[in-house]
Image 1 (cartoon, rainbow, N blue to C red):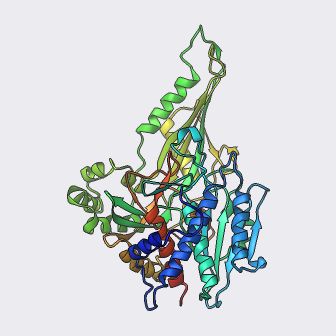
Image 2 (image 1 turned 60 degrees about the vertical axis):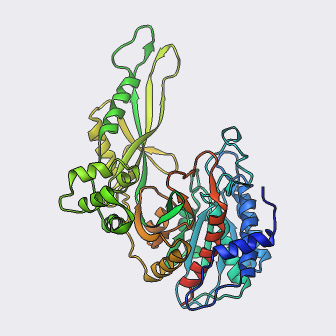
Image 3 (image 1 turned 90 degrees about the vertical axis):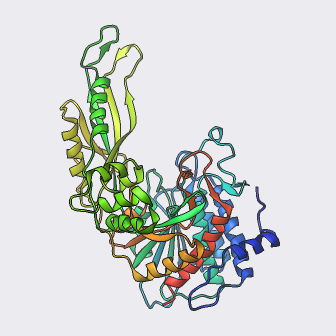
Length: 484
């Protein structure tokens, strides 16, 4: 464990030497200021990690209220610190730092909730911030209470240093991104749009700087996301006594259908974002056969052998097509009875340009079995025979102000990495802001080895040096893009 409060003078000096991120056309903040706000970010980080915000046993409101008190203590007027939500466990925090009003606001979003974590599965207590071997361990250390702490520290620093941006900066710390009844970003957009309305959005919900053997190679800016959708597959049967089996077994019927889905591949697709990603990766990041294959899939038609080789990489495969995969299975009601019902959940990540209902119909065709019913599962858990016509939104243009500052600061922080926009195979709260017409850019500035991403898993962790690097980076990044 590291102690609460200021780190030692030696540690602060080491961090200051490690992270010389200078703001363009302006003097860098003095090392003493960096060190003080490193300490603040650490204290907020520790506080948030040690508040259980999981859906089953936790309380997001507790975390939102704790952060709200920090903002009020830092001099934010009570009118600019709002805690609100649909129920007592799922409240969100919205904070506004007033600028000159020369431009529409910038919205920062970060979720406070975490996925479940059981003590018996971890080598440390998941709800204690533990420092060991150069890492911070704890549930949410990388997804994404590190980002929440950095976001809060940046706004408090701007307030206390008297920095007045060219636009209001709004920060929304929200509930239920990881699942649950009451997604905070969605709820705020539906019920309090004026409170968080903005010209564009920065989302930190990613570990964007990918390393290989400790060397940062790619800084991924997520400029588009696939569309998340769940489907229930079910087979019903009259059942009977297990001593007299019949061929019309609901479990076998469903299993045959799931095998057909496992063997099916959605078609390869390119859009402006993933085409640009493979072009840039092939220009110096990827090497040898991989680089050649990336160039080959951009041809018309794409080279089939190159596509087959690249598709062995789950990231490349998922970035270039819709994917559907079985994630849950339930069947039967007694050990000595034939199953009367078998159900599975199939989770799909839909490539932009396709709707949820289109994918449901595709699953029906692939299953090719009238005994298997395919229904849509909505965000609230309700099930319907037809999905919505919702589609993934076309990627927003890459803003020059966002890109310029990100490129400059990335070169300073990770000299061997280059910023490359990507289509994210996953989904985050950006799906709500994008759908609401708010251009959204996702970047979380911590470097992680691609083979050591532990988000949602056992012993989740973030490198200590990367946490403080991101704290300084993010402050300069937000200051830079709101300076004009």
